[in-house]
Length: 113
Length: 114
Image 1 (cartoon, each protein chain N blue to C red):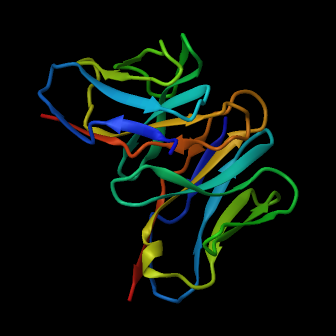
Image 2 (tube, rainbow over the protein chains, first blue to last red; image 1 turned 90 degrees about the vertical axis):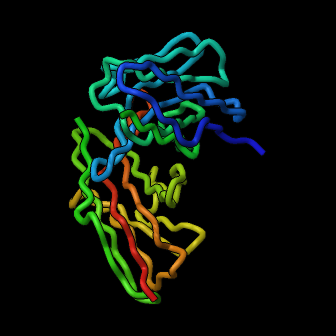
């Protein structure tokens, strides 16, 4: 079955460490996205990529970095510069057309102490 | 810029009762509208969408939403809820021009009690 796989489901890190969240899709979608979810704030867009080797900042990109070297992969690195990294991170993909719905992975819950 | 307001953060309801989850949006351009559902510790799943045509759209599990352009609303309704409908529901908009970029509301937690 096609879908989006995020790993790991739970991730714990010490403050000051960089950490990379994995996102892989086998839907052959061109576009991929990273959202951050915090209680009571809904989803906020971190980065998005319309095509391989290209990506754009979303609304809250500071302290994060991404790469898009392959169509099926869009890893997110949470750097030590991110001031409040503890959150639920969701990866999504779409065919990229303006009215196309997003398909989401099951998320990674990151806890930084 | 677009924005989405979900007027209720939590909605408690008894099983088999009707429910309405409210969503208002603001936009200077035409938009596409979506409702997503999220079960605990999972990603979001598309529930229904309005792109054009009939202003009333339905999902396969009994939910419906009506696009009201004059009131800039896209409220979600179900005439009789089940325990399994307990989840968080997100309203989202996407501008009709430019790149496919969804803007989400803060979510409404629907709690169905027996």
